[in-house]
Image (cartoon, rainbow, N blue to C red; front, side, top):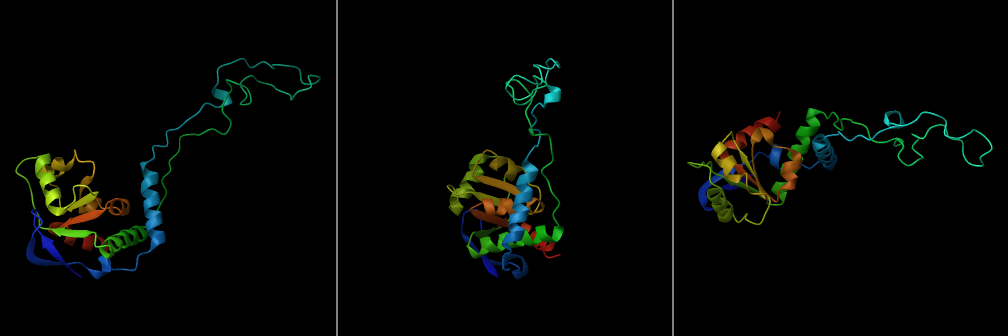
Length: 209
């Protein structure tokens, strides 16, 4: 699968990048994609929610009325959840929402997501670049040259590049990550995936195992 390599000015360099069919052209497995995205979102939840139960409410423990003869339901504590100011019945408790997912399923999900984007012509291959200093203006110029100013974009680098990362950090519609940080959710959440040449080998080696 051949894709033209562009420079940071959006022009064709005349070179072609060969995208592996085993990574970018498989039959997408929608259930694997669903599970991987579900796990990613579950891991973002703090799970620190908590409400007071009747045992944690400050109040009298005496029986508030006699057992029989009142014509209403029996009641033993003012801290019961049926009374105003009482504890909450079956309220939320701190918990971990994460769940285990097989590595092969996660790998299949990422390949499926990349294949979906490739089929939608939503993958651009860009030659490796860097900036002399972190400047949002420099990164904005790259987005403009690629026609991505109004689109959600995901730039995937071959390794750490602080100048490029810091240049993009103030832009809400664009995110810069390394190939090891690639996830199914981030792939699907972007309108356009921009793969730097240096990232291709790492992505294909990680997902071809």
